[in-house]
Amino acid sequence: MGLWSAFSVTPILVAGTGRSGTTAVMAQLGVEPRIAFDRVYPYENRYLTYWAKCALLAERPGGLSAFTSDQLCNFKNSEFGARPWPTTTPADGDALALSTSESLAALWHGFVEGVRRRRPGATHVAEKAPAWLPATLRRVTPVRTIYLVRDPRDVFLSANAFNRARGFLAFGRDESDTDREYALKLAYAWLQYFENQRVDQDDAMTIRFEDFMQDRAASVRRIGEFLSLDLRPDESAGSEHLPIHQTSSSLEQTVGRWRREPLDSSAAALLEAMLHEAMAFNGYPLSGSSRPVAELPLTEFQTSSPDGACSLTDRGHLQAEIRGADFWIETPAEGLSTRPIAEIWTCLRGNVGEHCSLYWRRPGEIFDQGRSVHSPFCPGDHWQIIRFVPAGHEHWHGRLAGIRLDLCNNPARAGRAEIRWIRLIPAD
Image 1 (cartoon, rainbow, N blue to C red):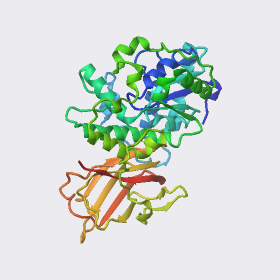
Image 2: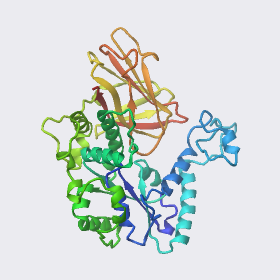
Image 3: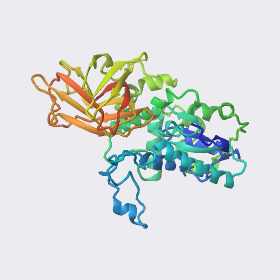
Image 4: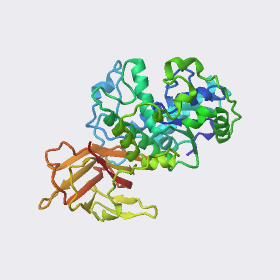
């Protein structure tokens, strides 16, 4: 970590879902000349994300990728991906491939040199960031992350209003989505950020959209203290883009709009159930009838395969040491009905593997490939939400007798994984 700290350019990662205030905060950061980034609305020239993704791809398993050797060798082709050759260890046991950290360190070094030439006075570089970027960049340099959060009910309304105003769909919404289905997508995106916001304390801060909009000066002072910069609040920062970015008639109307505007009741209930912990953590009110979605107790997952071992941590997480290609954990699920369950989500982080799977059995059955669903998995340092969707499977019916999760399967080496929760996502 900090391999190129002599260059003294610190990444500022503005992390949050769409419509959570990331554009407003980037515009405010743009007032400070020591913070380098392209001042091009909507401030989404993501250089750090690009280089980090390139470095991650350098370590991804190859050979079966959609990216081919023909594309690699074709000078005019602009596609890119994981290595398009099998990642089998050579006979001498010493492949030339660089690790993600080695690749990222080299790319970061070159990027910082370029920033220093173009912005000689820069001390920071800012960027809107996906949830995985802070943990990835920490491999090579200290970072400062600003998590932007907004009441998810307002995010839902704001995203829909923005889509209507522009005349096309964005923010993850598809033409076929019902409001409830879109709420589920937003909850998934919110959780990806929240699970990392929750643990990123030493080098991160949280700014609520509502606080930034209602008292920008106080929020900017907090950000300045966090960054060790004397930031100047500027109420006009980004104002030239308000006509195309704002979906409320006034500042007062952009906060708490879920209390005044029509909001589909099933979507609102789903957001509160899915984000119960996250909303409470960030100080957002929940209705009196709101309850979190059901979880499978981690204490019941006591049986595991010979390809690993698991144990409960003092934080109540399930820690797994993975030694082979087919690690799994199993729990009885006597009497659990499949009818009210559409999906099963797990909050997981792990440093090995290519895919995760959900298996189930009913009374008198064994676990079988015919009763399973699968999800790709890419190792990383951040918390991820893995979605299993058994609803619609021809054998997802009746009452269950057991559930098995195959985690981080087909690893190239031994490693570890950690599970924070396993949740049952309700059907309509």
